Structures are given as C-alpha cells and as structure tokens.
Amino acid sequence: MGDFTYCLIKNAVINGKKQDLLIEKNTIKKIGNIENNEIDKEETKIINAENKIAIPGLINTHTHIPMTLFRGVADDLPLMEWLNNYIWPMEAKLNKDIVYAGTLLGCLEMIKSGTTTFNDMYFFLDGIAKAVDEIGIRAVLSYGMIDLFDEEKREKELKNAEENIKMIKKLDNNRIKVALGPHAPYTCSKELLMEVHEMAKKYNIPIHIHMNETLDEIKMVKEKTGMRPFEYLNSFGFFDDVNVIAAHCVHLSDEEIKIMKEKNINVSHNPISNLKLASGIAPVPKLVENGINVTLGTDGCGSNNNLNLFEEIKISSLLHKGTTLNPTIINAKQSFEFATKNGAKALGLKCGELKEGYLADIVLIDLNKPFLIPKENIYSHLVYSFNGNVDTVIIDGNVVMENGKIVNVDEEEIYEKAEKAYYKLIN
Ligand SMILES: CSC[C@H]1O[C@@H](n2cnc3c(O)ncnc32)[C@H](O)[C@@H]1O
Ligand SMILES: [Zn+2]
Image 1 (tube, protein in one colour):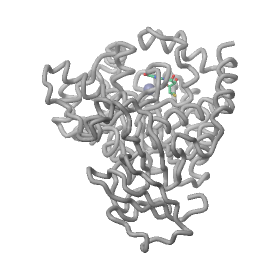
Image 2: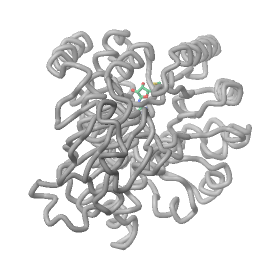
Image 3: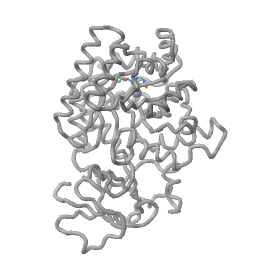
C-alpha cells in the first residue's frame, strides 16, 4: 500500500450504516467504529469519506479489453458480419504495443467507473498483463483461442494457451490470475475444446467461453453436431469438474438451462452488447429462478461501446422488467449483486462484498451529486440513477484513484498512446 501498511476510511456509508473501515495490507481488517488509539498514525493512510458511500469494487466478467481501440469503428452490424468483415481483419494488425495501449485505456475507463476486477479474453497477454500490473487493477486473463476446425491451427493455439498460462503464473502477481479462453463452439473444434478441458483441470483454472450468443451460431453448431451448444459440449464432458464462465447465453432451451444448473455454469450477462448487435435478450429471470449464478459483463468496446458496468447494472434490471411486464423482476439489490458478489463467486475471488477478511477492493462514491439526493435509498440511486463517475478506488489495498485523480499512471500519456495505436490499426 505505497508507504502505508494500513488504510483507514473514516465516516463512510458502509453496508447501509455510517462507519469506518480499516484495511491491513490487501485485506479488510475491521468495519465499525474505529478509534484513533486503535491505529498507528505513522503507518496509516487516512481517507476522510464524509458524505461518501463505500461499495465493493465492481466485477466485469466478460471483456476484450484492448478493443477500446475499436470503439466506434464498426457500429450497427450483426455479429457475424461485424466479426468477419471488420473486427477480425483489424485484429490481424495487433501487436503487443497496440494491445498494451488499448488495455491502459480500458483499465483507466474501468477504474474511473468503479470496476476493480475484469475477466478478459484476448491476444498478446504480455501487453495486457503489463498494463494491468502498472495501473493496479485486478484481472483474470485468458488467451483467446480460435482454430476454425483446422488441425495445424489447433496445435498452435493450444501451445500458445499453455505458454500464456506459464507466463502469467511466472509473474507471480497477486492481482493477475489466468484462465483458458476457447472463443466459442462455432469457432473451436471438439478436439480443441477437449484439450482445453484437460488443461483447465491440470492447472486448476477457469474456462471463459462465448456461448449461445446468436441464433445463427446455434444453427451452425446444430448443423455440425445435431445438438444445441450446451448439449454438444456436455456430450463430451466439457463442463465436468471445471469452473466455466459462459458469456452471453442469450438463446437457451429448457434442456440447456437444466445442464447449466447441473454443471454450475456461471453466466456473464452482457445486455448492452446483445442489444447493440441485435443478438437478443438473455432469459435472466429464468436463470435466476433456476439458481444459476448470473454476473455482468460489458463485452468489448467494439460492441458496447464503453466499459461502464453501472450501465449494465441498470439495463439488466430494466430490460427484464420490460420483457416480462413485471416491475418486481430483477430488483436493484439483485442487479447490484450480479456486478459484485456473483462476479466474485464466478471468478473464485474473495471480494465483491465489504466484509472483514475480504480483499480490499473498495470504491468510494461522492453522494453530494444532484442525482444521488435525497441521501436515502442510496442502493436504489446506485442502480437506477448513478452515472458511474466514482471518487476513489482501492484495489488490493492500494489507492489507485483518489478524489478522481489516477495515482499510478499519467492519464494524458495513456490518451496519446491510445490515439497513436488506433491509427496503426486503421491504416
Ligand atoms: C479470441 S479472442 C476474443 C475474440 O472475440 C471477439 N469478440 C468480441 N466480441 C465478441 C462477441 O460479442 N462475440 C463473439 N466474439 C467476439 C474478439 O474480436 C476477438 O476476436
Ligand atoms: Zn465477447
């Protein structure tokens, strides 16, 4: 924690009550009334949080973070056309430096809007990890694999994935974990998926995969295998004894929901990306009813077009009220927990709640804002009224943004680097 072992947050609204919170190293040590004689002033950074609320940092469970550089480059298209004709040709020009620049920009955007952890699938993980390390955010990184049913590509992708696992593990950074990222059942062969499953068990790491995003892809999988995607993957044990985070899950049969429940699949619900690509609306109320762990993701900035998870929180509550004509469905508490507690559960992290013994990933929000007054029913305001501009962010016990000022990196430099990287991509 910089020069301090302790950080004391004084007089914040915490879990609905005005109180203090003491951090020791990277962990929440105490929540309650903390007297001055309980702390060593020399060793303690004190944050005056009068008129602020402390919330657990948000957890974005599906990103392609360097795609900040693709913001606005190919709007208003369906998924397959968007990927085949615009995104994949541009991604062929990526390199470590471009990815590093796009990641710094993405991390900056996430920290400023209260996200402290993201679960990413992309290329050039060394560039991503470098940016994550420097800026101070928490991340689970997976190398995204696509073999398009070609044996030579498959071998190359699996070798890359294993090298990336070793590379991330070698960093030995408490904030950076690794996962496996087979892109989707319509871009990855059965052989690749089976090897991924083995590797996930070997290294005891999660699998992050796109599932059932569009009707087109389900048709493709059905034509190839005779089964719907979840049935197909289940037929060769892909979900057995591993932790899977399945992004999108828009179009699901009852049989697939049954499999998801049985196999404890974590869903990353990405409502804005799904709306923008006109993929559809995920049956979130049905998933919740079935006890499936629903979390929230933004997806990449090519299809969102930002990384503000507060927008997903609001939309995930409103959207399902609209489709079910039921205003009680997905209430504020539920959608807030999608982005905090449930996200942490999916990624196997001890965070997402402000509790003693939990990781100190904490966001302070200034309540003196017109859209947060009156200062009653604050959780309702956070879900239905807040714009995402947070005040102070602590990750792993370190202050990474204080009163709106980013601590570890130069914001202007990040903007410049990102602009330059963007022009390399489009020229
Ligand atoms: C193999 S790395 C990740 C890969 O996924 C692409 N991507 C971005 N958004 C989506 C989406 O909504 N569905 C499917 N694939 C997506 C990204 O451009 C990378 O190529
Ligand atoms: Zn995605």
